[in-house]
Length: 288
Image 1: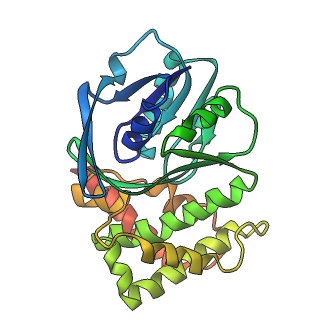
Image 2: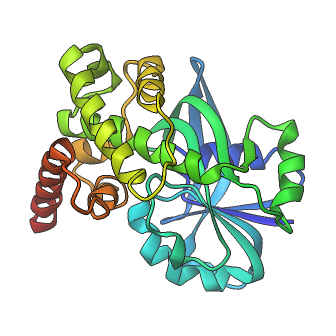
């Protein structure tokens, strides 16, 4: 089986590392050509000397499975490159935060991603988890790969209630990405009671939007999300925190604004304020 991983950052590096433990042919792609990456985890630093190709310079090879682990902000551009890397049955696993990009990819398989890490140059600090959740339909290549991954630390779990699980991950991102991004602080902010109270309101509004047509998110999920936040390493940031502190574009369009655009006539004061503030950041960043 020929496999590609596109985007060797905090998520893609962990996926790539585990895929390289299988017997399949695995090619790694980034925006530039590089030689390897380093992962820091459990206090130990390990260098993986895997070649990373420049995706824009690649032509010819077609892959059976492609994992796209680049930020959601890069997906529109990458969608135009994918036909060169795909045959008619290629399965593309989308490993991003948020929602709203599925239609850009033929044979796209969205995943709820539970891999927490931070990229420092060519080093990735892996905090916790190595898990992707996808829907439960049958796949030609991915089903065989899931079996082969049992010798690795990467889990790909097929879930019959994937829609619910994906919305739950969207809500988890809504809470922690918004508050860490706007405060420019790490998960330690959830030790503050007023931050927790604001997060509760934000989560309640997100749940109301998702359940506005039919009930998808069950009662009690808000407390489950808060418990997840409390369990994070206190020095761990989020993709939005790292993007804002580095002055990069955020995945705002696919998380907060995705929900805001679907709120209809619902009253969502916490979400409204957060969307205004994050939109102002994007506006100012675009002007630079």
